[in-house]
Amino acid sequence: MNIQLIHGQFNAKDAIDIITQMIHIKIKFHENKITGTCTEEDIKISETKIKRLQKELFDIRKHIEAKGDKIAIQSTIEIQ
Image (cartoon, rainbow, N blue to C red; front, side, top):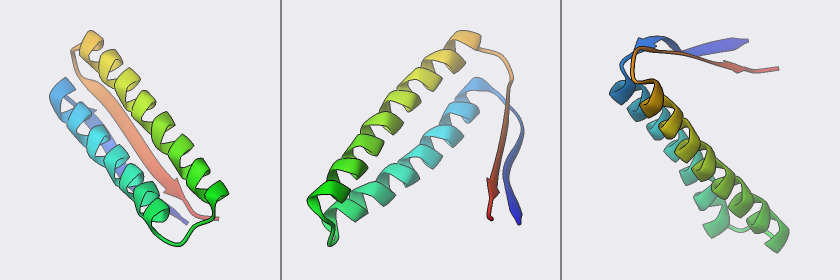
């Protein structure tokens, strides 16, 4: 089963806003795992994932800002 979350063309500001909000949701998920009952290993994994997401968000923002025009975004969740 697939869920189509995003499919369209956006101006740079809207593209950054959509991507930022989605990444922040994923970061919040990992922050909640850290504050929950997790092992030290689980906490380190979540911290690593948060850092990776923050870096990817920084990189994609720079890319979109440099491009400046319409940005095509497609995002699908595939459930197996």
